[in-house]
Length: 119
Length: 113
Image (cartoon, rainbow over all chains, first blue to last red; front, side):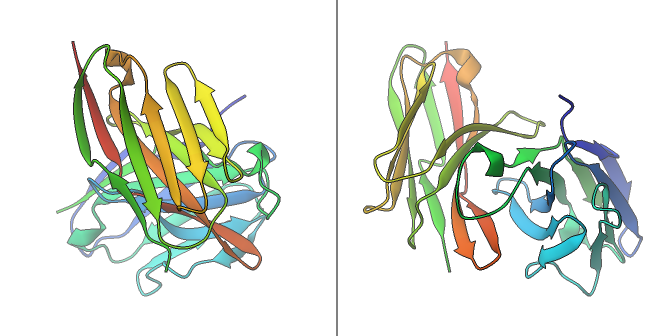
């Protein structure tokens, strides 16, 4: 079974430039997540989609970050304009379901990440 | 606000020794995950613990959950170099239509020969 795919793997940009990341979740997974992982910290959820709808974007800096999942499969995360503090690894994850019953179907599987450096 | 703390943050241990990583969290939850992250790699799911008293074991790793104490442990038995990685616990925060994973700070484990 193919895992979560992300591209690009690395990106270096100057501050105030724009950048976009792409994610393709595991086939059949309805829920997709974008996380930001700053060096030395655990991942922090930015946005969560259920199919093509947003269910949680409370920690997304909406003045500069945007994300979409138009057909309920692939997703893109955009930063415009980028700041120095946006330097981090951006992880995409997917799960089969999300709910309150627990179990392996809600386990999140992570992609390899995109390493962003803002100069 | 749910906070998740791990200790130690860094652990250097010799091969063959045993040790435990602790994960404390601040509000009620009965679902917790352990993930492993190798340098420059993504996160790999190790265990999901779904109830109070849950215990899971895989190879030299054993995880347990005490929801009353709001504590999970990851025990390493007879460590080997291949276990060197960063280990994260992540606690589920329930919230209406969606659940959110709150990650701990991570424990960097270095197993020395």
